[in-house]
Length: 171
Image 1 (cartoon, rainbow, N blue to C red):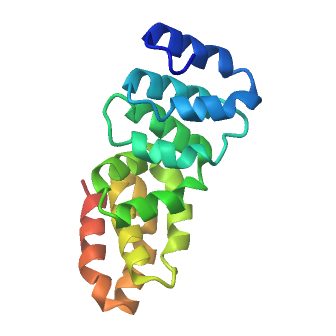
Image 2: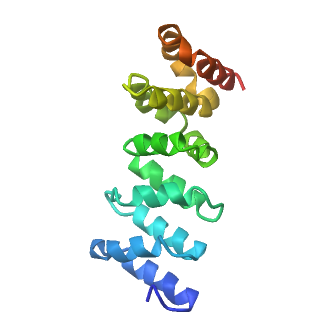
């Protein structure tokens, strides 16, 4: 049914399959569809499973890029939270930052503790993108101020990124 030419048939298949965990492979396949409506609906059903399967994480990150699927993607990432933070930071390192910024804003203040853990990562690029992600939270990230100030003192190479993040907290 997922390969049927008619959109209503594909959407009906998503509706029916959401009730069966055994249908997860079909839902994940539908979440990769070329049709944004099918992708969005399938991802929405996957995110309602309890627990949300980790296999949905890369699909949700990809879905952040398209306006039609962004809402379902954010909801799925929220359901996978806090496990999704590491994957989101990795995507931000690849410069897919606009959609990731939006997702972090969606998490708001609840993302701060998970992001703070990444400030001590051994990889400087991960620390750099974590500072950026904290700044992406805007005012919701202000609890990170003392941690960022300490990081800037400890690592002068990140001082510029820290200053930019601190500026975002005042917006």
